Image 1 (cartoon, one colour):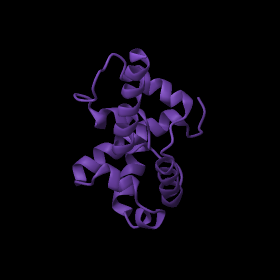
Image 2: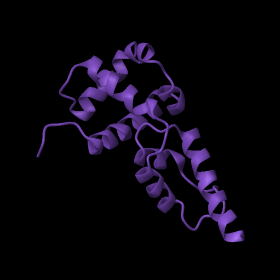
Image 3: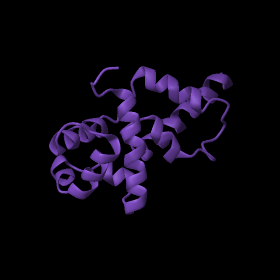
Image 4: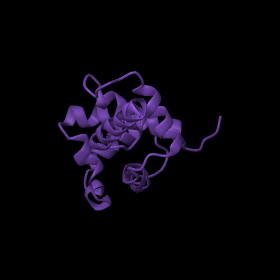
Length: 130
C-alpha cells in the first residue's frame, strides 16, 4: 500500500468534512466557497480534520489540499458518467439526497450538483422526445 494521498483518501476526507460541517453548523457550500486565507483561520476545524483523516503533513498543506479539491467545480467526463449512472431512471430531481451525493464527488458544491443533475435529467428526456 502506498503512502501517497489519493482520490480514495479525498473521498474519505470529504465524508469527514461533511460530518464536521454538520456538527459545527457550517454550510457546506459556504465552506467550499472560502478563500485559502479564510480556511487558514479555521485552525480548530482543520486540526480535527487532520486527526480524523490521519493526515501526515502539516496544517497548511491540508488547507491547500482542501482548497484545491473545492476550487474545481467542473465535472470530468468520468465524474459525469458516474453522476449520470446515479440519477438514471429519474424524471425529476426531487427525492435526491444531495448531501449524500456530495460525498461521492469530493469538493463539489451542492448547488453545482443540483444544477448538473437537472441538466442531465433534462438532456436525457429532451433526447427521448426527439
